[in-house]
Length: 327
Length: 283
Image 1: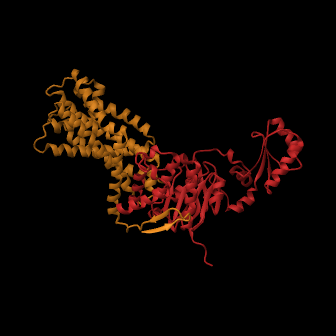
Image 2: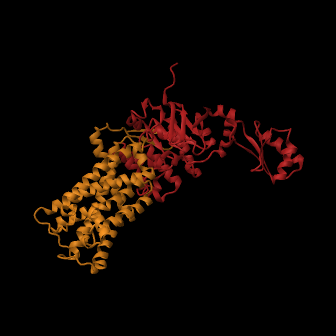
Image 3: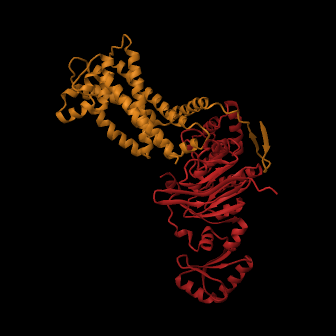
């Protein structure tokens, strides 16, 4: 069997901004036709990595290739196979949605008739019709993101980079993004997706890499990582600090407790999901202690970081990815 | 043209085959043209930008002609004939502010990043910025000249003077626009660029003999004015339009060569720095 074709390969990819090491020796291998997700909190270095792959920023050291083209020496070839949708939709505010798409299509090299056909089909596909003649500055955030996504699909790229495509989006726009991602995978496009949401990486990605402070913390398939992160959890929220202490003494020894004082919460792993929820609820009820809430929840990014780094992602200083990337 | 039915089976996807890539020079001209068209479309869309090049110069003309002008007496010519060449020179120099604000806006909004992630010739992005700005300033200059002519300005442009004037102003616009493009890339906030631009350019323009003769100024402002590059610009435009030279320093005795020298100097310094900055912004 021949080895899988790799769309992106980085070797020791590193980026310094002055003293700050934004990306530290990251080795990526993205197989053609798969979805790869960089998952991490704000300021982890995700945007810096994708900017280097999109030839917008040069690595301090290390190498990166996209479809076999070196991002430094063959930048123009990289640009012809890659499309990027940034975290902040980079559209011209004072042009209409349609004018923005036409400009992108023309800049990609299409003549006017072909560009018109393409843009009209993108307008249909991304449900832009009703606001296509509105200035981009006048449309909602979700509509804007749809235009942005359409703009990055003027050509069928071999690698599509989506930098936090659903951050701050309404559910409908998020659905459009997700279904687009799935369609593109079916069409054979390789996707690199950055996100802060474990749920999103889980729903879309074949391979997930956890990034923190510019380091690759862990990588694997969604199920690999989930096995390491742990299962769903049951959270019990106490009415106050004293209630929490009482709960701890009542449940300790029966369950594997994780205690968060600031959130007045006890957390119990729930590999059996509803059965575990029922067991915890029964124990709380038997204790007779009042609680605010008992709920089954999915592991969050915070849990993932806790499980894999032993450090909470919430304690990571949140320097803004973009400021860091452009300074 | 291929149509692929997406997995959802609802929206067909159109894929156009890309025409063969033209040679780099042809791509450069095509892309620059597309991007200039974009810049020009923006002027009409942004009321502040339109007013910067239309209403603001008209206000300057009216205020100086009818408010301050009533107290300013220039020996040997009407105030219209003194003021209008000065305003034309100022319009050229203020290209720094317009180009700076437009450039910093584009760079901070992420639009330039998007252009740069496309397979376009990089020089076309910056060329379009410069050409678009020059066209915008020309619009303002034509308006100022038109208002001036209507209000009694009488330039003496017979005998090849008009092409000389146009050539000089284009050279000036080109040089000052590059200064603005460089400044806009260095100052990454359009508000700061606007503020700083006026803080620097307005005094330089007031000192430059734009509105009142330099010869009547006190020693300190006069000394600055005699070497202010804008003085050379204003004096050169005035010499070509009205045939008068105020004199007072080397550059004011020979304003046209002095202005050309300043423009060349600005270009020699700013064009390579701007191009380098444009490249390293991506590093």
